[in-house]
Image (cartoon, rainbow, N blue to C red; front, top):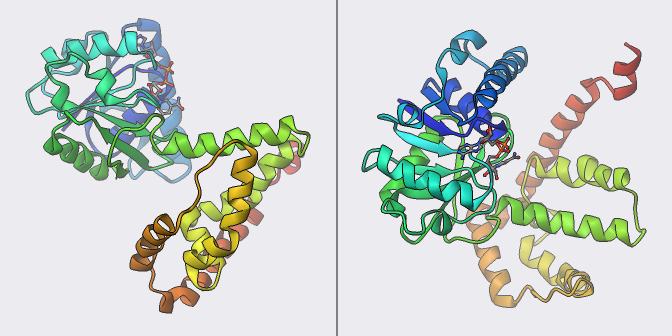
Length: 316
Ligand SMILES: NC(=O)c1ccc[n+]([C@@H]2O[C@H](COP(=O)([O-])OP(=O)(O)OC[C@H]3O[C@@H](n4cnc5c(N)ncnc54)[C@H](O)[C@@H]3O)[C@@H](O)[C@H]2O)c1
């Protein structure tokens, strides 16, 4: 299939890598010739790195040959299966672009925005193709962090979201369908919660920047590379997440209140979360899963040991 990309900046190039690696033809449009030139050399560089890292099944040249950079939007999106819009994060840039894309693309082509925070309902305001517009927010870089949030507006047709989801899944990404629109979606809301607290801790003289980062890279983040925050606390407490909420809920509520936040883990909310966790992991299998988590962390610890340290690189 052919995929059209609008905007050849860092995410446009990265999504070109994702689709080309999966065997699709990609036409990448940017209104600025200089951007196209830079993008072509960036694409080459990224493919070479992936190849050197053993993450391309084919030669970098072959994968790169599937990507064409074009200066004409009409040419870029002719007969494509999906448009991935990667224009600057500005409504006054994206809205007119969607007006053009509505005219230039077929009646069943998903128009997917990489936007980090703009809702599809805003992008689609007054657009006759509103039913084809959704947000498909990738992590950066998407060829190494394979999660993509799909956020339709109430106008987006379900068949469009499903077609987009199938294309992303076929290209090796893991689509996460949000139930409704929310500013910042899930990825950036989670990142934002952590960053807001990190800024407060530095502001209040509790910790320095590099030590805070180390708490994440050596602690929270290493664990999160294996299991998410819900599974983490589910496995941290015998009895699972309900037991964790009972023990730790009041302390987290106090910390939130210190920051002016009042979102208590009510019994109903904890019951909803616990029911979803128990459906994924019955308590009888809890000990086995804890052992599995440790095995995964052992693997990561070993691969960290094999990695050269910064001072070794400097003296090499
Ligand atoms: N950078 C990230 O980490 C990241 C992660 C996820 C999503 N996103 C989203 O992806 C989108 C692109 O971000 P980016 O970081 O690649 O930006 P960028 O500034 O690197 O690239 C934007 C590209 O758009 C081009 N452009 C300028 N005017 C345009 C127009 N009218 N129509 C189309 N293209 C135009 C520019 O020449 C440039 O090549 C944004 O919506 C951003 O929020 C970014």
